[in-house]
Image (cartoon, rainbow, N blue to C red; front, top):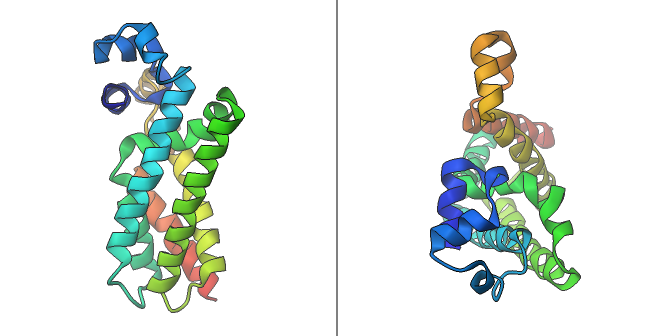
Length: 195
């Protein structure tokens, strides 16, 4: 798990292969298969761990917070999310390929644990703002996930796209500064919900 995380941090999730992970971990591929049946299972395990860590950070940060403004709430959410770059990257890959690439019971476990974290975070968000209830917190957290999954990939272009953006800077406008843009969008959403 640590080898996979370290490699994903350096080169991104999409480039990871099981062979590289086993080599980095100093394992024989058959040894790794005792624990994970596929690359997808291993990465889904990282995503599941990412949910638990994000919940811990966000709920811990919001524990003493009350009556936060839209901008403050957005900053808390985004800061706690961006503390784990690999999890941000995994947000795209989970629904795209990881959940479908594992057995049903493994997908069920992932869903159960991620929704436990999601529910706890929605409650913490609602408790930290007088203007945001649980239903609104669900909208905010759902938007966070969708926006973060897309913006992370756009703001971390592949080497091919990075070279293209150097050649045609106008096209690189989409290579956003991830954290400030996500805070801006979530602030607008929370403020809109307040009206």
